[in-house]
Image (tube, rainbow over all chains, first blue to last red; front, side, top):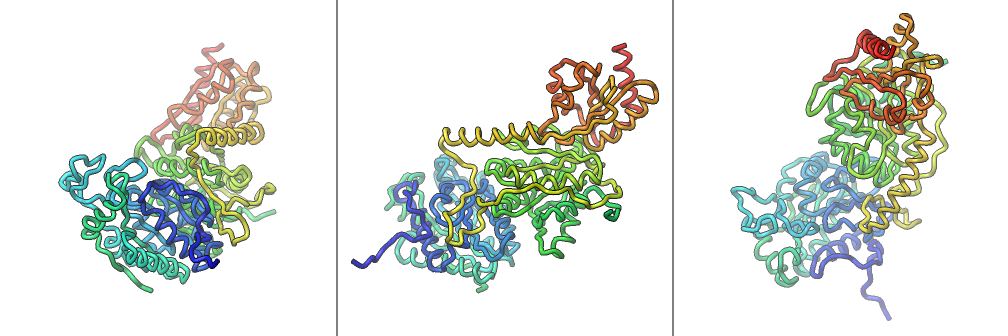
Length: 245
Length: 354
């Protein structure tokens, strides 16, 4: 019988710990497919963050390094500078990348560090149980914004792709979503372009993936997709924000 | 014989690191150690190395973590407030069993403190400056020549034991110039870095550099195994210098540039008929307890001289198990003790005992 579907080689054959309906599984698969298709597994080093994807080092078949909270772009810089021919990517959530790791993110981008950042924006801290993230929407109820995010006291969400695209350093930045087949296909294209950008030594690339967190949003996986479409996509418009390829 | 050159302590650290094969340096400016960065910025591009000025000490040390994970010889340097920021990554470096060299050219604290020399980070360095059960080898040179030898040794120790090694100097040592030669001691035979995350080449299982172990039993086992390494280091890697101790009745103990001042005090006390000697620890962790224990019964008192409120003095007391009275004299805030102050203090002690 002809095999029509298989696990990418770059993904380890282990069960993922993610909650039902969580989109990390989709994004892991897309990254692994891209690594397979570009034939770069043997030279790729991934950097796992602190957050829900902390165990990513057990899920990707390439060499993996676990970083301190927010420091993945600095750790990736250290790895990349030892061998510019290696492919180095970070996989980070919104709290990791846009709160505690803002400085590391902005400066890796400003340096045009030739790394690829996969940024999962699900508007909440997942691992610690659903606290307000730098990307939580105005009015969004979380454990630490129980009355809804009050922009007067808790400020406004950060649009990372827009912010970083004002810098001269980045080569490629795109925001995608994984809420439907069409968008998942686009997400795959964006991730492949980001890795290709690094392979061709064009500089810093980042793909922001608008994602869901059904568990901490208190919604079913299906409701979560709908919430993403109705609430997140208007605030975080999809599209290419920087493309120097 | 190798040519003698006149070099600042900070520059000596940088040049010795390069000679020891360090090709990656991640730094952030802070007084009084900035010459290390400046030297690296000038030299590294000429020899195919990397100098990168990071956005913070936090980032610089996490870059060190990344480069170390990839198997490189890598170093960062800072001064007291900056070292507090590096503490996070140093704990991760220790927790992931990575080799790296960190330099602290101490200035006075706490807080922003001052920019003059100090030894007030002794506790921070020797008792584990970041979170968790871990140790770091701490080397304390007392001259620019010793800086060179110990810097080379630091990289070997780091690679041999797969752990962070700190070179702990002070502003005086970093800033002063002395004639030196670059005849590095012979290095150790080092293990292959088969654990490095430098790409599988599709020839091996993937390597993972990590310090996270969710299962208590697994983490307990790993910390226990690492502790065996620490115990071995305590048994085999202590270093100290004994000066005029053979017939000494009174011991002065000091490390780093303070030990140079204390030596003058020892000579002067001898001139005045007081049989003084000096023990200068070169490794602060592991602390050379035997250096002190062997003089229990011989010396009547010990005086620890430090550029701080008194930190190493605690380790001295533990080393002699309170069998000898241990006194303290220090200056702090960026001031350095003068030989006559040490002499006066010692005479006070001698007078009290006699």
